[in-house]
Length: 633
Image (cartoon, rainbow, N blue to C red; front, side, top):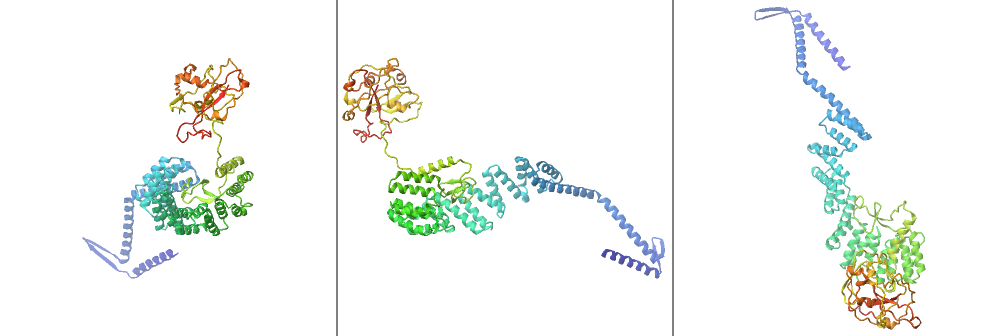
């Protein structure tokens, strides 16, 4: 509307001007180069306007012809850009939709239309990733590093590709380069911090965490917690070898996160070891009110060196009063009371937990109380049986993994501060029998009674796994090495003089033959069987009782028997001394003097037998135990 008004005003102005000239006629004479031109002013004005318009028109035509190639090129370029933008838009939509064929096609179109556009390279890389062509994607991201405006984009792409392929070292290098290029980028600093935590590089992780704090990329509570966890991990690793450094780190971590149990436990143990009981108690009390834990109770009980069990119990009572609602308080009291052998107090402390809060640890403590107070094995078995079906106790858990010791990072994902003190989640796919057996094994490992003295190996046949290789041992008399083949040594019975009473020590009835497939070379080296020929089956005599004083009589020294591999397989290769020793018959009672004579074989005590013989007094001198003789048929 405004333009129309302006146009009408312009036309009216021109018309009024021409009318003004028409009302004032005049003559205009022009003499130039011999020409004499005479006309009116009005006509001259109209001719001047027409000439000016013609000149402008001709200039426009000539200018258009002069600039026509560039105009044509610009028009083609604009059309190409339009097609490229449309391809980019459609390609990104295809990538988001997961259509790899359409994304690849649009990526090719965008590359032809806009080859140097950063968005084109992004589309090509994402299309290659969608198609599974990792090499092409890495090559595209690597080409982006040459341009300053696309360097960060290329580094991020290469970092993601390295993480997908599990190349943690390469991913860390790309993240470090991105941090050096621009430390204010959140992804590069956070990614570098996570990688350093996974690799347990605590020192570099602390520096990166401080960088995040300076750039405002992390809040103060999160910064304090993560720094405390890193310091606690360093203190836990340096506790044994560098106590001063571990104490400094643990105290700083305790100040940043008072509820962090590992930091408090490390600091308390070191302080208690140095005799600073008061400071250790303050550290434990501060953490116990926020996060009770068995390690804290143990460190508090043994904070003062030289305390009696009752003194430790009094200290634990004070600690438990600070957080009486936690299950760890009565358990700590009961554990210390059992050590002090105050079973009534231990039972009283656990009584509120027996109905609705019974756990495996509580049931195991009740079994210890029954065993220590009355030695009632039936009650002990009853509590152990209840422990199998009781609820599990809290443990250090991270990503489904249960660990005996706290760690700063998860062993599965490498996430920082993943371990939590809580009840583990059981696997529902496992059968109830498997779960019960695992629980029973855990409880038996915790509360198994001390093993009692077993019978000597001479009275019970040892079970030794068969070994194909020869065994070398020390002889009982002259300590010469004897090589024994896996095959048993068979000795043909021969008449021998009457047995000497001093050579008889024990009786073993009904031993006929030892098979090489069912007995190990170790047992074969300790027992040499005397086997009768199969064609001459003779009745077996009853066992011959041996008086105690005869069995305990010392045996005279005998020459060593060396058996080579060739001689061990042949009965004729046995030395006469060995045949006489093996064929020596045992004395018979009067009712059995007629019949087949009994044969004697040598059975030295096994090397791992503690020995319970009355006259076995060679242990102090270091000599090999005495031989034991057995009478066989």
